[in-house]
Length: 528
Image (cartoon, rainbow, N blue to C red; front, side, top):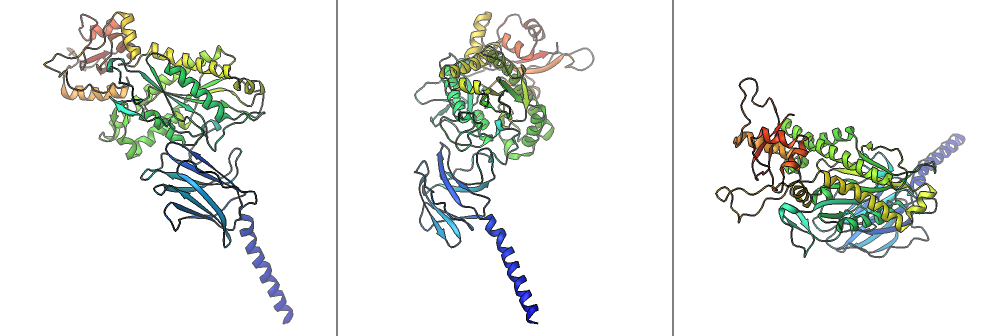
């Protein structure tokens, strides 16, 4: 009997040890902490030695956030980071069996926390994000997004320079708005990676996030020195912001183009050459499904048109037109940029590549991703360290971008006005005083996008301001491909180029005797 009792006791002890073992193996020490403060929020990251369970709570005093990490300890060399942004200070210690981190933050800050699995150069991490009072999370966490490659594992933030809105565009304080007929084209430049996400790393330690920021800043400086162009940086420092937020910044600034800058990596150090990427057809389809299913997305403006008040069929048609325009423009821009980069050295494949990168998914802003070089190639890493080479890269990208705007100038821009002067035509003039009040504020100059035209087409058919010429038999619109309402700053030549028809065919279809077009006129676009 005593032997049985002893055996049972031994089994109980073994069972108890076995039950404790998993808990011990899952304990994670807090090794280090670091802070990045961006203009929209502040991120505090704790490096852990393994997976962990934690609880976040409000401290006893205002502006105190407590993180208890179960079964953990503080590493002996742990050092609390200095205050930045909404984060002020931190104390670390033990609370029973848990490691307790107490962060002192701005009393109005809104905290959010989550765990991250190992990725790239980092192991397990606990993240504490602090948002200004009342502000919500500006985007999804990059680790949970469906980014297909390291190029999309980055996330960056908007430039901190305040802006004020005017006529649908944003203008830095102190700068008067341009005339609507000659607004500047806006190019959003996204420096890949940033903050706790360094991106790829070269053999000598050069980090992608540093290269991309340097090239982006140089490109922005060169763009801002060009007549008729204005740059917007998604980030202007070393901080982190989620993936989707990057192209949202471009849309908020009514950007005419979005350029994301990266430096490629490959396990084979012989890989070399620049490359340019656009969104794949699969990415276009999946993003369209998201927009049509998400009520908040549909309420947003796409190419100047809200999809929220449209039935599903019409919303799908308008979105498809807008995406089709954006992808066609992206292809053209990407081809120009790739040719310009090819003059600096070899390109990786010699043609524009396609992928479902998150940063390329804006439905109404033409978007490209530029891989400046392979940072994992020793020769290319050495060139990326050189200021002169980075300037040359920026100049090449600028050349491709500028060439696109010169060949396809958006209506109402300085480029459109220059094209009109070269072609000897006049830009769209205002309607007579009886039809338009000269003292009324001008409407925002929209981008020239098919969805905008599609929306105008719907309005035009409802109001019947200029019906298509009738035919003796068959459909009334047999030879009509589209209907276009003339916006401020547009020219006859520019409209013809947008639709790929000749000026003569456009004039004949609309019974025009000269090259002058008038704002608000609804023009028939012939099918050939």
